[in-house]
Amino acid sequence: MLPPVFANEPAGLATLLADTHVMASVNLTCTTCTSRNLCVRCRSIGRTLRAAGHVITQSSRYDALRAAAVGTYAFDACIVPVAGHEHSIVDAAGILLSQVRVALVSEPGAFSPASLPSNFKLIEEDDWSRNGFPVDWISAAEASPRDVEDTQTFEELSVPPSDLDSARRRLKLVARQAQREIGAAGFPEEARLDLLATLEDEIAWAKMSGTCFGTVLVHISRKRTGRAATSSFDEVLSFFRQRIIPVVRASDAIAQGTDSLLVIVADATGDEMAVAANRIKKAVRRSLKDASKEKALSASLGRVTLGAAAFPTHGTTRAALLARATASAESIARE
Image 1 (tube, one colour):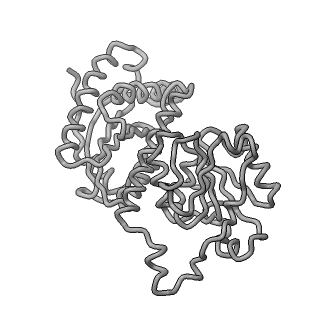
Image 2 (image 1 turned 180 degrees about the vertical axis):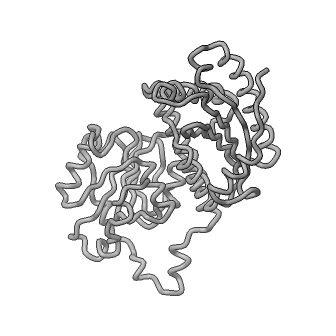
Image 3 (image 1 turned 120 degrees about the horizontal axis):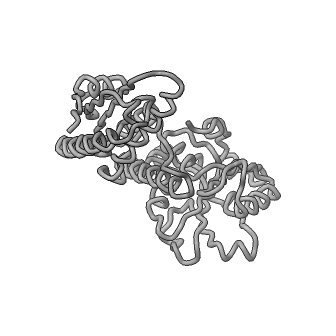
């Protein structure tokens, strides 16, 4: 869920440009820290901007870009840190943040100012670490949309739908990569994705981007109930999840419910969906053999079924896709 501040910040860019003495609302984004535990770089930048009279709100870089993608971003300016290889981030930010001032913070020589949009200010880390973080870019003089004739306003401010689709797809890849990086940062496994929330999110991306995707629902029934069984059943779900991960693509996602796993097969055609479902079915069958050898798993493991559904072929809502996957489910026999 997006922080409320993205929807409620004052949209004051035009006012800011008309009066450079008015403070700006600046979104300080980062890839490592949180608003409650800022990294050294963000603390330094924040102090400089506050001293200049601006209001600072910290967020993750992904939250900022996603808010812009869904139309709830209303800061006057945004600071975006990027690594030299993250051209996809720069492309997405250039399209999604076209209406705000953007400071692109990068390592020296990674990007050329001439290759960036006109609303971007390139700030190389060596420069501001020596001379302090610059603030003049926030109120840099530039023609306000109010100064453009009505007949030209749409051409100046509009973004082609194909460009927005491209930005959203790039941002989706960023989200997948972020999930994997969380898992590699010391957690025992990749951050668990909620089944229903993940499916809703995928539907929203597909509708915005005009893409398709597939779902494979693996339902695992319980043999018994109770607190002890619930604890051990979490281990059952994790057991199957770990064995499905190797047979899906890096761009796919595996979400977990109370008694099910849902594999989101991104941008899948009908043939790709069939191949993915078959691979997952084989992985589950092999897992059943291993599970039967472990008493703790066998004590909780009941019937296992697998069903599939495709967006938009079988529906465009969460309920419709889950209903189709459930209706098409077949029992996975022990071999």
